Length: 135
Image 1 (cartoon, rainbow, N blue to C red):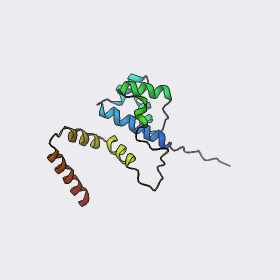
Image 2: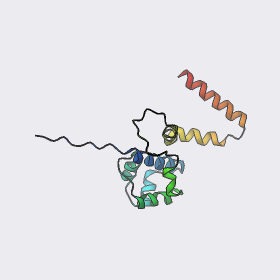
Image 3: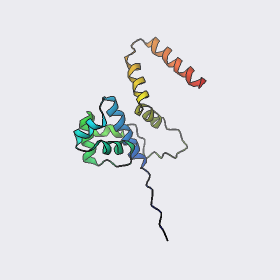
Image 4: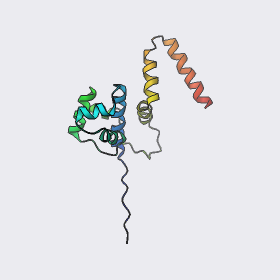
């Protein structure tokens, strides 16, 4: 009898932490290679951490936090208990984290944060909502 290889799926917490690592790294305009050099691993290892395919140990998470200028608790912020990706309940934190983990989301967030006029901000938000409703 041939046994099938067990395909491990990443734990939702590992995925969440990985997304937070990526979000903060990109926010800091840091490459995976730069972060990898700062914590003494390869950029491929950083990729695996960010995807959640490899778990980040406590000491490594502490090193990542120091390299990114945040406390280790940052990687668990806004996480409400054990969130399962298969849950039918909407999770706004997951949606926000996914959005801010994307290049477009970060670019949009940065640009929006530089708009000081509240009327312009409201108009911009209204424009985006209108465009989303049409799509």
